[in-house]
Image (tube, rainbow, N blue to C red; front, side, top):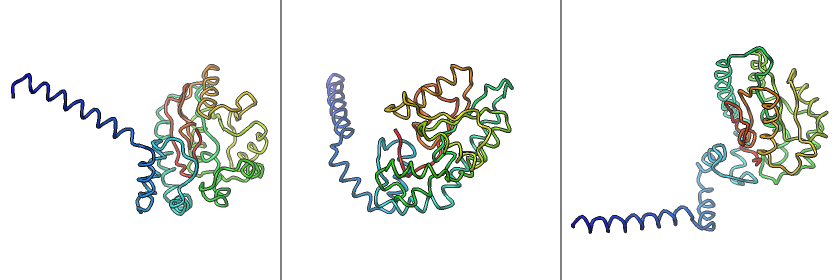
Length: 258
């Protein structure tokens, strides 16, 4: 084949490959759904599903797949959940110890609350481990009890960060009317000496978690705080703007917050 013919053939092949790529990328939803339903019968599906949601590749999701409820139950009550959390905290502390604390009180670390400092597992045990549609009323009743236990790994991180000299800020999606019970629960669980507990006010209603938390981080930065680290169980705790120098995502296969 002469060079002109080869060039034409190459262009046609490239166009065909491009067209095929478009078709592969834009698979019809019913076909994808059928494939997903088929995979749920595979024993390895739940482990892969957990990897998918933790890496934020699944996008918005609402409930734990029915076939994975047992998997989530065993994970949340087993050694693996605690081990995963401990390893993440080890890396967070390794990073924190490299920060040169200035001593001016402006070196900050931000924590989310639910499934980051406090565990709501006692609530989810009675609500299908995330397989039920979220019920705000029953969850608020649980929050009012102020009985959520501390997550051991996060308690270790929290305590050591205070000893290193960080100012701790708690930034939660809970609403302002829950301040008293939230503070009470934090004290009960051993989380004391934080600089500020930030909750959603009236002006924050309707905002996505990503936007709300980004705005609050920006306020802290505008006040002169250097946000070196951030810990949360949702990507919306960590993404957006005014982010920390380093962010650490804790595991949570029970729910998703946008």
